[in-house]
Length: 119
View 1 (tube, rainbow, N blue to C red):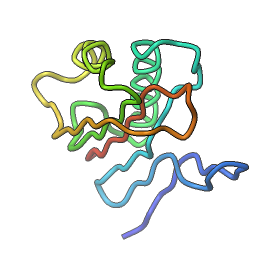
View 2 (cartoon, helix red, strand yellow; view 1 turned 90 degrees about the horizontal axis):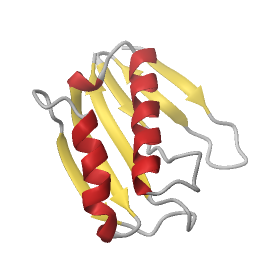
View 3 (cartoon, rainbow, N blue to C red; view 1 turned 90 degrees about the vertical axis):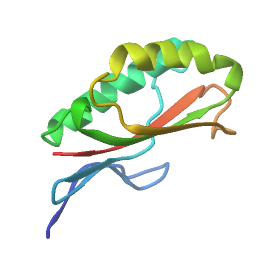
């Protein structure tokens, strides 16, 4: 089975694919917001918009999510982040999900999200 890669980064940060498609499986990398001046709600919304765009490029959408992994810099932001997530996620097809507290690569990153979907 072939492997398709979308948006391969070249550095100076990590070299990786933002999206990998293998068969009907679609894997997105951990995504963070570009606008790191935003609060956790703003960063979460930006990430979810990016997820929608990558899923569309891969020929799928959020109704076909299988898993989601969310990392928060501070769990005090859980409810604020979750309010944006709940407004976005397909309520009839929610993925299996984990959300944990994590030390981020940069201090202004408040949330990171990684998802897996099918076509």
